[in-house]
Length: 592
Ligand code: ZN
Ligand code: ZN
Image 1 (cartoon, rainbow, N blue to C red):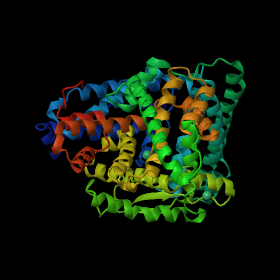
Image 2 (cartoon, rainbow, N blue to C red):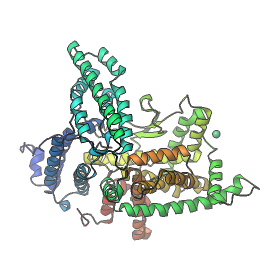
Image 3 (tube, helix red, strand yellow):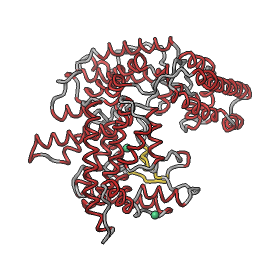
Image 4 (cartoon, rainbow, N blue to C red):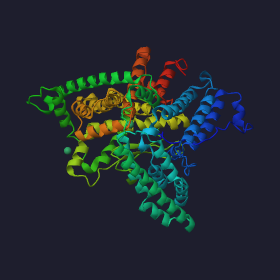
């Protein structure tokens, strides 16, 4: 995610200054060519304004920049946004290709949302965790794009302003939330590690001159002092003063944030209703399937009368089937070809055999995040690189009980659903399609709800097409899996808007979601620190599924699933509401 708290650099968005180039002669005549030229200028300017975000996306021209988060910076940012919005208004939506129509709307949303974050949500006032030099310096140090000496020179320039950076941070804070203050302390203490022994060691063995080494070593010491000063300010002044605001942002801000972050044609309130409804439907389906499965697994025994107890009993039985501790990665590897064949045989979409997915053990430097499997996609500036499916072997130091609990969570049924979600035809397949209509704007400002929604939709679409033989077992475990993202949406709203307490939320997740207490408490914590993000999976999924059903009704006999899937994916990682307009042929009619 973009780090919204980042201050933006004063910078005039240069107009095309070399009108003699051929591309810009075409600009005089074709709106699309003119818009393409605008996008290139805009993105370069945007990177200069957001150097940390640029580095994280593989654009390393501004690695050495550190922006000071003060009022002057915020004014410069406002000016940049105003100027860019004015430029955007010079393009008529109807005059552009569908691809560019979406890009124009993504850019407009991005700019309006930047102003809303700065002027209305104002996280820069209440989120002390928004300031952390350790995180960005750590990324620069560990990156592989430049040789060590060059990385260290960039770091040296960047941290030379550490004191001013943290002074501005301190001045910005006013009545922060208690939760984000605790997080700011924890993360900045973690960030201090970046400026510790490993960095000093890198400096010593680098090819920097003695003078450069001395300068950098002094700057590291000054940065450590600045971080420590900030942590002390939070611990000794902010915490004892006790002047906190609530972490709950309330109904108005939540609805606005939902609109900017998700860009759905549903409102937050509508999605909340939809999630409640979907939760009831999932529980009903689970009860029905558990009742059918009980006699198969517990012949001659009496089923629990309580439906939730019955579901728990059957789920606990099914999760006993799982990969062996040392065979987890192998189990994933074996499933991928099966998924490829199934998608082909059932004509769900056309796959590109020239872009194989490389399954590998998660590299050591990426381990430990708790994600058992993830897809590493090449960034927008590194398109030719491999796409990896990283699967993490179980840590050797886990106790047998820890390992068993993990293996049961990713049992034989759920593991297949996970592979569909992450790989085929989920995230990996979506990415291959997105790369075919390359748009830097969609790579940089792409819609997370669409990306996650597609992966969840892909799970259901595979099962509906007969993957897993339509068995009660796989559907029951899909229901449980899907219940998690549904409940994420419910608690996000319940906590941020309706004041739900920790006790209410944890009880609900354990009882209705069949979650362990540790998972439920972790979810509560996450829901106090973020807003709307937890709602993105379910919202994207709901929108995609609803769009498919809408087209099915319209097209009747003519509806073709493969055609739907391929057309849907052809627009890249765009908000579902814009894809919907294009697929329904209503582009441009709704609000610009
Ligand atoms: Zn076991
Ligand atoms: Zn996902």
